[in-house]
Image 1 (cartoon, rainbow, N blue to C red):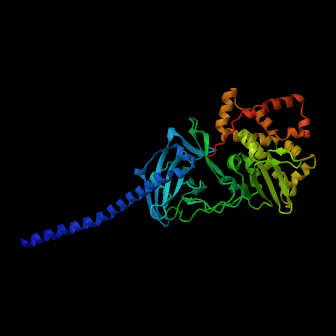
Image 2 (cartoon, helix red, strand yellow):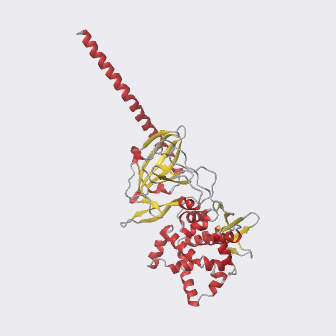
Image 3 (cartoon, rainbow, N blue to C red):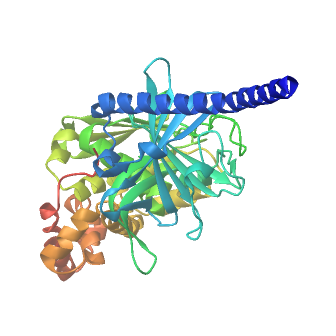
Length: 450
């Protein structure tokens, strides 16, 4: 009987030890996770005033209780899902990114210190779904196809990562990739017909000067083939020293314009023979010492094209008119590129040189060759990027802006030079263009940048 009692006690003791052994690690891990989330939450509450990302205005509910905790080569990472206000959603300008999923990501950098990112996870199929814990910093599902937008909440520097079957795509140096890599994320709504209606640009990636700071990435290691950091995008050879309104519009034009805009910007990227610098100055003057909106010049010795944009002029102009001025100067830069390229295999430049010989000057060439494309670029930019202003115009005049209106805008900077293409127009056509151009000053001056 004593032996039986001792045996029972031994079994109970062993069971208790096993129970304590199994529970302790789980409890310790859970406690550690709770502590990590609390630290991130406290840090966020203290430092959120330092963030200036536009997404903060639309955060409806930060789901701290659903935080995703992962650990790996970059240490502990806390990802906190959230929803947007008023059933808003996000997509790209083409509306072919679906099922947006929003997170704030906290990567611990020592005691009570975090790097903080805003992360959007998209799929490229409207029938796909994104589950909270199926995708985290250290693991992306094997069948995941889509894009991840990552924005540093302090610097606002943004990166786009593309995934195919769970593997992060390697960036190419071709112009085609650069065009695809440059993207904007818009806030808006999905319409019943499946189209996406953007109402505000949130941020853009690409098309800017590389300032040497690292691009934010997502996927620090382990799982889903995303163990290596994101390669940096090829930096276009555009030295961007713009400020204020011009800086905002240049970024939006380089990131979200139509093919015409992209083609203009891509002329100076990669293996281009030329660098281009674009700068803001309080006042800009022509070669005859007249104050102007902008000028473009070419330094043959250094193969450098320089665009100067007047801050004082642009601040008093409508945003769309300011965008036209920037585009106008980029066209001048493109003409300089084509006229001065030495690459005999550049068919685009070779053909243009032959055509240009029939024109008197750059403005006449611009009116003959670029006017239609400029009209289309302004129309696309107004409707998709400056959409609030587009809607105000429609409400004010009771009709959407016509192609003739954008053509009238495209004549800006050309008709005042009395180029042959303008003087050859019938008088009634000139009158119609001038009448529509008189509507330009009523357009909004503000730009959709924070």
